[in-house]
Image (cartoon, rainbow, N blue to C red; front, side):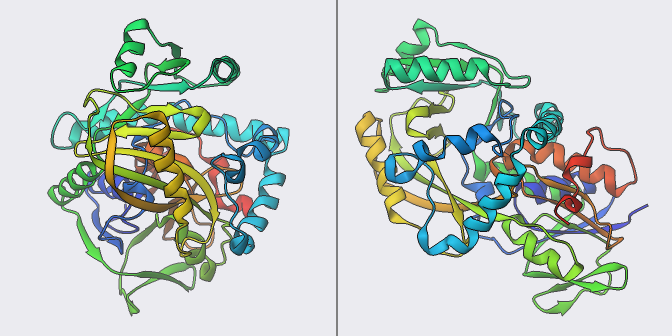
Length: 411
């Protein structure tokens, strides 16, 4: 029985894993170096996307690339100066998008996402407050009749797992119009979820972890090989007995695994948002997706946020201000009630070429578990991933088949 565990990475996956372990009676220390909460865990759209069961590594997604390029008004950007990151990733994605691999990936991801909302309900039940998790669905809107017809048909054809949608009612269209949104068409997913506020979620999870006997500490972690186990350095100093190590370090995970002989070809998929503290946006309005602009707008407790863009590249490269300018232009063109000044943010989603996460036990280091690479679904899959990590740590069989998520698939 595991007595002690060290979690590397203080994002949503790390916190969910730490909480699940601490509630099993394990002595948990979570080590992170993002005290300002700038990681993607705390800058995402707050959307629990149980409808996204089809991996983005697909032939259909590849065929759509030309029409989605930033230079043509879309959300997909390939910064020329960062080609050393996105070109190898793109070649691997091409190989991962064969029909057979897509079908297998979809089956694996569907099983994981199918447990996402039940796991979130269980997690929310132990957190302070009773309004962090909402299950009000979300809107998808289009600005022209042609886009609405094509978009609705595409959603009708897509596999959305357990999520269901319908046409927006006349009353819902009036509610959208009341805040200046006058789409040519809209659908409403009825059973997807939202986190009411990401900062409140982080505070609640950290407080609950402390109450369960866990602790957090600031520091930069480094993995080293020590025989058949993983050793740990924090800020360069060896940790004598880290116990079980759980790697949940997002985009840094691939580099951290190299000394142990693992290969994880992860890329930073950079996303951007702008936030307005001054906005006439109803608190009860669920997230609104403007699909023909590839933008999602979310009402949080103290702000309204518009988010977009997929920019594979270097996590440490400076952000591109043109992305923020485009978001502000979208807000202005749509007449959304979001007033400047805007707070600007850029963060990196950790993405593997097959758009599946890496979750499992190391075959090289007996004391190492890993859970990273959740791409756009980190928030969605965090609760169920934490439960899987706890099951692996206690030699139980996870409720979900995780064979497809073994990091060995890249070795």
